[in-house]
Amino acid sequence: MAWFMLVKLISILRVTIGLFFVVSGFLKGIDIGWFIDIVRGYGILPNFLVFVVSVLIPFFEFLFGLMLVLGLWVRFSSFVLISMV
View 1 (cartoon, rainbow, N blue to C red):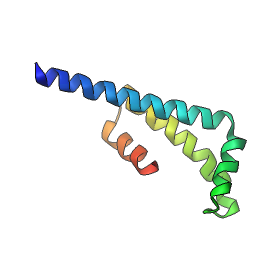
View 2 (view 1 turned 180 degrees about the horizontal axis):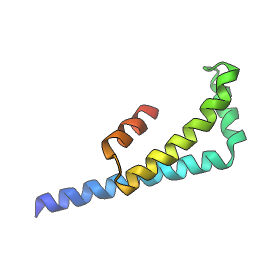
View 3 (view 1 turned 120 degrees about the vertical axis):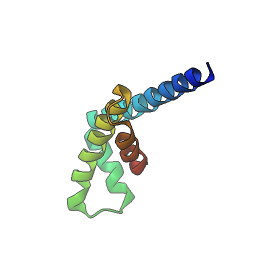
């Protein structure tokens, strides 16, 4: 019984974290100009990389968050999302 509850808890956490990244990536993707300004404001990247990174981050957040929600390649998706944090 305890094993079943642990598996259920892990599934709930996996879906919750995945939904967080799906929503985060979606909101950044909708207003990409706002996110470009934020990335540019950090002052870490050269100007020619700001646009590329600003487009890829929301795409990866959405894609790998969705994969986490659906339970596809969970370990790889988790690794990519943890690497982005």
